[in-house]
Every structure is written in structure tokens, then in C-alpha cells.
Length: 462
Ligand SMILES: Cc1cc2nc3c(=O)[nH]c(=O)nc-3n(C[C@H](O)[C@H](O)[C@H](O)COP(=O)(O)OP(=O)(O)OC[C@H]3O[C@@H](n4cnc5c(N)ncnc54)[C@H](O)[C@@H]3O)c2cc1C
Ligand SMILES: NC(=O)c1ccc[n+]([C@@H]2O[C@H](COP(=O)([O-])OP(=O)(O)OC[C@H]3O[C@@H](n4cnc5c(N)ncnc54)[C@H](O)[C@@H]3O)[C@@H](O)[C@H]2O)c1
Image 1: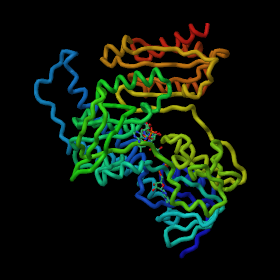
Image 2: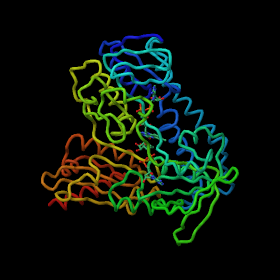
Image 3: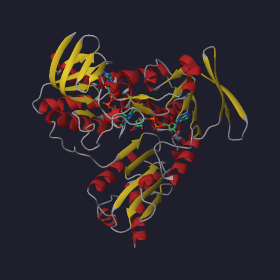
Image 4: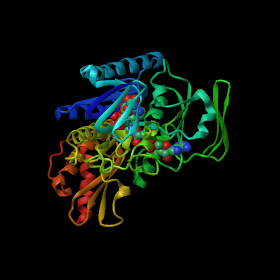
């Protein structure tokens, strides 16, 4: 076994790990980055980018099927070629992965270790069977893995996760999706629009990340008009027969329905990927799920020189947060014991369904019971949205009664990915509702809908 001494050892070459490595090097320290799987990051290989590519194909199919209300008729057949759909998803995905790989190749070879990292103690790691790393500081950036309830193992190799979807050579005929969270809604709707027979089953009534009951109910009703979605499904039986998965569930009319599927996509949440790290060999304090207890501002685990960033800490499992956290963890690892809070941006989350879902600032669930008002707008009669035939949506903006400050928003509606940024920038600047209303709104744009919600909040504040 080789022995290697370094200032900072980073475990995981995903988005957070690469940012941590670069930050430690920028601070003038010796650093190594350890990776056990394929280079390329979860986001580019099996996450953000391939899912958005599949959604783009689905949107093209959907638009082609919905031109008639404009008086535009496609009289020939609209043909979805599953091989070509998956061909583009994979080739464009590879293009995005190649950018990441170029960045990895620019890291000096002696700084890149390949193998599974395990803790021997707080600051000693074994990498595979070949190298022992002695570090002054360690950054854990091992990402997350799907959490799959045992009951689904009955489906054998019909059980798949998001990674498997992006390996398909063509589209299957029938897919059951468990979990109407972010992944289940995005992929379920996309597959349905591409002609796949889709059933989405949930537990406990959740729809995406929404916490405002009125918005959640509106989203549920909207998606239910487009594809089969039961957020609180009663599953009567699950079995495997030959090449097929069999699911017996209670339909909305209370009748038992049995259907056969090619695949069962389990998207029931993700958990920090820390199990194989042998954390029991460290002195780190672990929470009830075995994840190191850490400070969300500095990412430091207790008072040690171990830091944890990105999906591995499950604090804000999103791409831009992983990048920010990696930078903070890498900088603090390099400067330990001089540890400082990193930059935190306004909370923002977007789900790339149609209509899109977005959340900015404080979630409805985190607001106090009293002391705030809710401004509302429906996009059903909103001018620009009606023009485009995208007039589905409901938005709530929350404002602090005492100060008039914008607190947050949850909504489903057109162009939410863009409006979310306007709102996140306002939140980060601590603007009041009236200050936001002093800003320009062009005509006719979807943002005029946001203005209606802000005016409603402003009236309620008075
Ligand atoms: C289907 C899907 C769609 C998504 N879409 C979006 C989106 O649209 N927008 C958004 O903001 N976020 C999205 N996300 C979330 C986003 O992809 C993640 O938040 C982000 O990729 C996390 O980066 P990370 O660096 O923490 O983890 P990763 O990129 O997963 O990196 C972790 C790395 O650690 C390595 N590793 C693990 N254990 C060890 C070990 N013991 N030794 C050595 N190496 C190890 C792994 O092999 C991996 O390469 C999506 C996720 C999924 C799954
Ligand atoms: N657009 C984006 O930013 C984007 C896209 C995809 C993923 N992500 C990230 O990935 C994370 C994980 O996504 P996810 O969708 O796996 O998790 P999630 O937590 O968003 O959703 C999991 C869903 O599964 C349901 N569920 C749990 N157990 C179930 C069961 N036994 N049967 C049926 N349903 C069950 C839950 O009630 C919930 O609705 C997200 O939190 C997000 O951070 C982000």
C-alpha cells in the first residue's frame, strides 16, 4: 500500500468535490481528489442534464399534438421514434459530460486517485487496496443514492432508477413510477408525453416539493388531467411475472385494477451516500441516519477538520448548492482551523414539469402560523399566458405583515423558471412588496401575473 500525505483530501469528484478540490488548490494547499465511480458528475451523467433532454423531446411531442386550437393543423401522423429520442438524449448528455471530463483531465494526474475511499480514522483514508492518504483536512462530497424500500425488490430487474432511464436505447411501452416527487413528476410526465403508458403512484399525498396545500392541490388536479397520478395510492399487490412487473392498485372508483409494466421506476427520495465510508472509525458525531452532524454555514463536522458538502449532507440537494458548498468546504478545509461561513444565496427550486413548479425564499411550511399575508394570482385569465395557451397555474406570494417584506412564494405556472429568478433576486435583497411593485413590468408578459399577486399582497398588507 502506497502512503500519501496531503493538506486536503476530497472524497468524490462530483460537482461539490470538484469545487472543493479547486478551492483548496486556489488557497495554495496540496489537495487530492478521490473517485470510485465514473467521472462526469451525477448532474451531467444521470441527473439534471439528461432529464432536461428527455423533457425537451417530450415538449416537442406535446406541442406537435396541440397546435389545433391555434388553427394550425398537422394532418400527417406525428411519429415518435424512441431510438432517435434516446439517441439525442445520450449524445447530448455525452457532450455535456465531455466538458466535465476536460476539467477533470486538467487536474494533475498525481492529485487524482481512483478507488473507493474509507476512513481509518478522522484524517486517514484507505483508497481501494492501493493507497493510504494522510490528510490535514478531509471533505466528504460523496453525493446521494436513491432510497429504495425493500418491498420493490420483488420486481427484480424490472425495478429501475433514474440512471437506468438514460441508458435505454429506445422507449419502453409501459412504466410505473413510484414517488411523485421531483424526479417522478419530471420523468413520469416526459415519458407520458412521449407515448409511454405511465402510472405515477405516491404515498402521503405529496406533489413535487410543494408545501402550500392550495398550490399542491391545484398541481395535483392539473397533472391528473394529463396523466395517471395518484399521490396517495393504495397498492394492493406487487409481483413479477416473466419479463413483466404486475401491480394491482385501487383506482379512483375504488375498483381494483391490475396492470403489467416493462419497468418500475422507483423515485421515492434520495439519501446521503455515506454508508460505505466506515464513518464508525472516526470520532465524528453521526445523526440518526448515520450522517455526520455539521454546521450548514461552514460545513464543518463538529470541531474537526472534516467537512461535508453537496448531496452528501442532504441539506439542499441541488446543483448550484453543491457547487457553492464545495467551494466553502474546500476553502475552510484549506484554512482550518480558520473556518468561516460560506456564501449562501436565496433559496430557489424549479421543477421542469409543464406547467413548471417553483419555490423561492421561505417555504409555506416554514412560515410562522400568523403574521404574514398571502397574495394570489391565477394564470388562467392572465393575458400573455392565454395568448400562448399556457394559462394553467396558481401562485402564492407571502409577505411579512409587520415590515411588508417579501418572504417567499410557491407556485405552478408558465415560465416559472424565469419568474423564480426575479423573485429570488428580490428575496436576496430583502425587498418589500411595494419596492417590488416599483420595478418595471413589460406588457404583455407572464410577469404581469406576478404583479397581480404582489398587488393582492400589497392590498392585504394595508
Ligand atoms: C434525475 C435527477 C435530476 C436532477 N435534476 C436537477 C436539476 O434540474 N437541477 C438541480 O439543481 N439539481 C438537480 N438534481 C440534483 C443534482 O444532480 C445534485 O444535487 C448534484 O449533482 C449533487 O452533486 P454532488 O457533488 O453532491 O454529488 P455527485 O455529483 O453525485 O458526486 C458524488 C461523487 O462521489 C463519488 N463517491 C461516492 N462515494 C465515494 C467513495 N467512498 N470514494 C470515492 N468516491 C466516492 C461518486 O462516485 C460520485 O462521483 C437532479 C438529480 C437527479 C438524480
Ligand atoms: N428540477 C430539479 O431541481 C431536480 C430534479 C430532479 C431531482 N432533484 C433533486 O433530487 C432529489 C430527490 O428527488 P426524488 O424525486 O427522488 O425525491 P423527493 O423527495 O422529491 O420525492 C420522493 C417522493 O416519493 C414519495 N414516496 C416515498 N415513499 C414512497 C412509496 N413507498 N411509494 C410511493 N411514493 C413514495 C414521497 O412522498 C415523495 O413524494 C430532490 O429532492 C431534488 O433535490 C432536483
